[in-house]
Image (cartoon, rainbow, N blue to C red; front, side, top):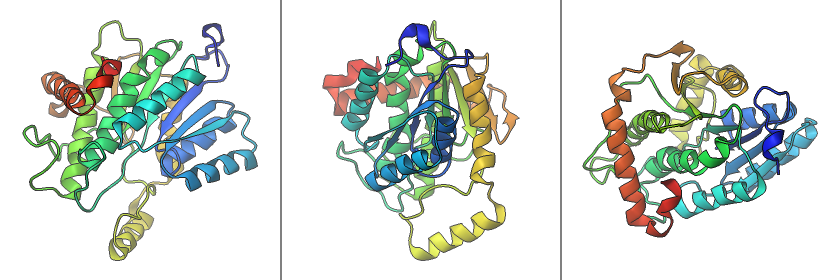
Length: 297
């Protein structure tokens, strides 16, 4: 483990970086690139085969740093918390947390906790990781969280009376709701008193990335065709994340939409809504996993 006097943060020493959703797309590209630069990268993912392939590729590419793969179902609250504990047992400090994990679900499915799966993976796991790893991030000289979602998008809303979308579920509604929830997560996290951790909300735009296997064959074909015509490359979309890690912004909260800095007075970044969602999330965690809720306090 790295002790406090071995922190990185601009000293040229290795960083410790946690990447959720790091076995596919942008997360995978970031993990391999940071390991090649000498950083220690902890990748969280659910697919053991993809995890082994990532480790093999890190060796093949001669990564100077190490890649650790932690197999975890980020839709599961206890699993995500266990991953946080495992990281805390192995490392004294985390310099950067990069949040990519997301999975689109054509139909409404429930997790073991009885929660809607998109909400759990795309939003709730990011909430748990942001707050759960905060003590380790605070030990870094240059701590940063990069939440890769859809900031700047105004479509979608929080269904305050039906966050689990029991009525009117659709893939688009679930994705947009979780995206707006991540916007508010950044606002509430950055507003914590005496918080040195910088939070970046980053929208990369349409990227040739992600796992399309949940979709039917015709939809996969259409998405691949559209991606080939209009999407950004993974390398182009992930490039700004390297910058956020190497030189975190000075402001507690930064929002960037495809290279364009956004004002923080957008209606999708409303502080009162952020505080409301934070309260609702804590209440939800108390109701489904009360014995461990203190970890996110």
